[in-house]
Amino acid sequence: MTDLEGQAQHVTRGAGIRAGQERGPGAPAGQRTIRRHNRGLVLSQIAAAPGQTRVQIAGATGLTRATISALVDDLIASNLVIERRPAPARGRPACPLHLNPDGPAAIGIEIKVDRTSACVLDLTGVVRDRRTIDVDNSASTPKAGLRRSCQLASALAASVRLPVAGIALAVPGLVSADGQVFETPNLPGWNGADLRRLLAGMTGRDSVTVDNEANLAALAERWYGIRSTDFIYVSGDVGVGGGVVFGGELFRGVRGFAGEIGHVQVDPAGPVCGCGNRGCLEQVAGKAALLQSAAAADEDELCRHARAGSRRALAALTRAAGALAVAVSAALNIADLPMVVLGGLYARLGEWLAEPLAAQLSLRVVSRAPVEVRVSDLGTEAAMIGAAGCVIRHILASAD
Ligand SMILES: [Zn+2]
Image (tube, rainbow, N blue to C red; front, side):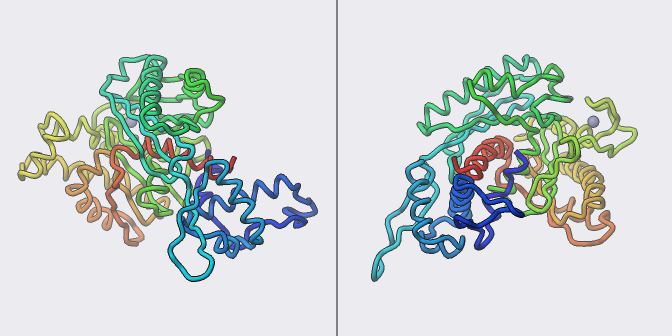
């Protein structure tokens, strides 16, 4: 999945390969390779700037108009691109090209501790439908949890009536590159499960994507939300997840486990965490800790109390912002990133968290370089949108 990230946005002017040109030192590219490269290039061009005409794409890619026309016809026949009606103009009208919203779509699923959600994302990045069921996944086996997810996905697919090209799954835990759950502190029964194999078997697909929910949420922000190229994403829920986007790409670390900000220790004397350590960020600023310290039964009540000016609720939020600042500033001092994106529950609580967090970061980030704190618009849907987005990016990159 990593090699697909950001490809549609990285269109280099004049990057088209003409027949006879060489791709590498001394290695002539085969006709099929050239065609595939150019087809992907044209698709990326349309994805990056919808509404361009064939002539404009020829100008941007350096390919001839005849080549572009053949490739565009091919993409239209493959259901990936549509031509809209031209605007009235003098001379021969040119039709603007767009990704086909009724072309191949993707299903993204997110498994949380207390619910399962799924959405259908179309080729243009629009969520066409979404559903959530409240369910205690921590009491389920991976098989039972995935079976419920598949039922949800099937119901969604039937409702939108789009061809589903792929399915991807977001889970709250450390996931290896081959889809093995390495550690899920909040879903202990899922440790060690081979979710990729299980889900592929249940859906009858050769391959499915399984990844950590915060990584996928960070990618959703990169592609469909904040759209910045350099930021740290922090999302609050039962656990606290993080994802680092650097130079437009998700930073995974050597073994794929980067970004686990929820298990940065912010209070050495704090409560014991599911990971076995003490005083981790999620034990101090996770959903359960926040609700308990605000004496609120749920998120709605916490928001109501905060809006009404409850001193206890506001103090709990200030404490959470302080704990976030300790963990986030450690990451920023190491990685030198200019932006923090608050997601999940933290996005919902952004009006109380963003300002105190920014104020504390300005004191804790040693460079004193400005750090922008942004609140996600994708909110609690980011992970499933990012999951589906991986499938869409794969389609756009491979242009098959
Ligand atoms: Zn921990």
